[in-house]
Image (tube, rainbow, N blue to C red; front, side, top):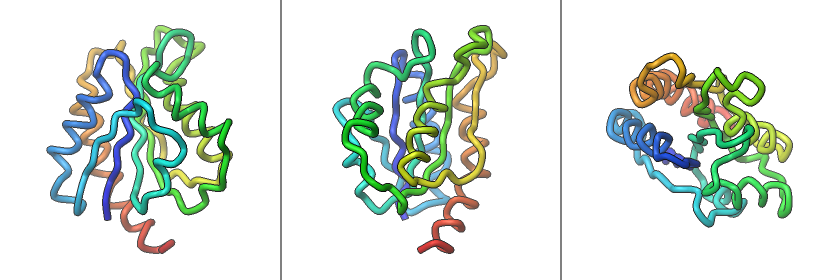
Length: 156
């Protein structure tokens, strides 16, 4: 089984998290592929893979610029995604309480609306805590990935 990490970022932090996961979790899954969301659309979910949305939040609770096309395509080109299983790493800053981690939360809501099923809880990183998102995201993924792969085998 492949883990496909879809990265939405403005400052590359989400990409660094994805790269850390790729290096640290390689022993848990057959393959880990990182795909920047630039230019992607809903067709990215046609592949047989476990997906991990790794995205920051930008502006007033928006998805990053490079994620906009993919996010919009989930509404403009809707199709049933019942076979899709995914997790979410949402990066944000709690000092913006009204829109904290909305980038990841928005993807989660839109994917669920199309029938995709999230495995586990969202991992939300708060930049205002001063912790390293790469370290905490990787630790979360090491716990999440075995559970997610087991859930994929059950539903296959």
